Image 1: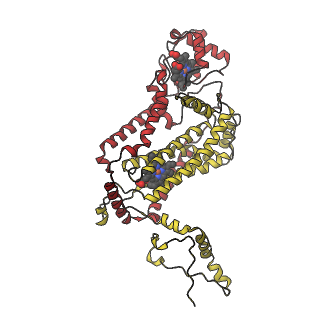
Image 2: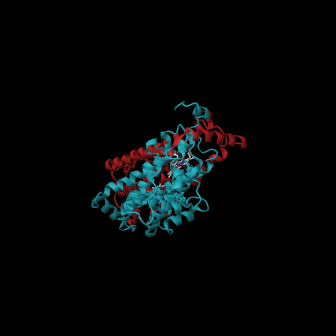
Image 3: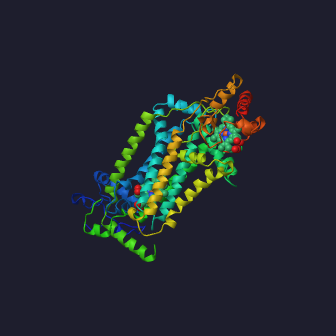
Length: 278
Length: 233
Ligand code: HEM
């Protein structure tokens, strides 16, 4: 059989430079080449189907190169449980997004209906109060994880060169998460959330120069009314989640690009001569 | 860090990274386990703490003490510490924004090469103080109850006004005799001696923030409330 032509590589990725998957030797075999040509039986074509589809996509996106670079990059020795807090925060955010979508299916951002729609969720919808509760307490969990993650990066000096920008992105994420808490609190429209938000908006209004404009923007006018609620709703479920999603993307890009910091007490010599474990 | 220190850091880091383990499956495994724990905690909190609604929002009565989400308590408590009305904006915007600025700019003023916490005493002490202050303020906020009674004896004709005051959330920010919170609003135990009734009514309609406006309170309630406040001296 004549040797197969090399696969085209339109995106010009140098696979030899990419990290290798950490497989045990038994699994480290090159996949059999896919049978092509006119005399291929149906069975052979089906067997190669998965590989062909992956190869087709990969030829056009070079996605496997990205995935290999991302998934099999090394994390420094000594990486411990404290390093899971960032991804845990992200997981809590995903949980908020999913439960939030379900709540949005029932929620009505109208001052006369909002409270009733949440009552309906709590009392009649299947698993309604459960999902509502997950969203409500998920917010608390996310905030706590966020603060602990921030404390971790602070104690480990992970905000220092070259990761300064990732710290800045993180602080913006912190602010956006607080905005989510503030806008979300009004939505059930019970007495507590209503009056807390009135006071909160008034607080913004005390600021010099921009304060009154900010308060008017939040209220959607000079009085607290129907537009206020729909405005909070739009900010809470579209604007800020979009910003947070994009910022998490930037945050993770920087994490992957720069690598996660090693614990500050690790030194290269510990690494070379193995073993001062922490 | 100067160029030499940067170069040294990057060199040492790449050595430590090269000696590390692949992200998948080692770090991913830990992250995944942590995600499961997070999920379980959220589910348990939802099951045991629920998501009850309070009474429906009613713009005409503040029978509820305004209480924000717990992670805003510390901001609200700053208000109690700084009371003079001219300085309210210092508490509401000044302090939080300065704190935020210090936080964002941290990597730009703390540029030393040292990363070990035990050798960064200033940074660690600053962090501990911040944590203690925020925890203290948050706890203060958590235990500042939602009082709805005023014990002070008043003549029968002011009784209704006293109930309106007790049920309208004033106690969340004001003190009447022994009841209520001392701040962010001034003590009202002797307000009648300080302000005439018309001025009190004007304050209720057009207060200085953060006090909410009570313009939409039903007139007979407001009248009783003003009468009650006016005789406090
Ligand atoms: C929605 C919020 C956030 C998400 C989803 C998130 C996610 C992550 C993830 C997954 C990592 C990888 C390493 C690790 O988990 O420790 C990371 C690293 C980092 N994060 Fe965050 N983060 C968030 C908020 C913040 C905040 C508020 C700050 C600080 C103000 C921050 C600063 C950093 C820094 C400096 C690193 C680099 C740490 C290192 O290389 O060791 N992040 N973040």
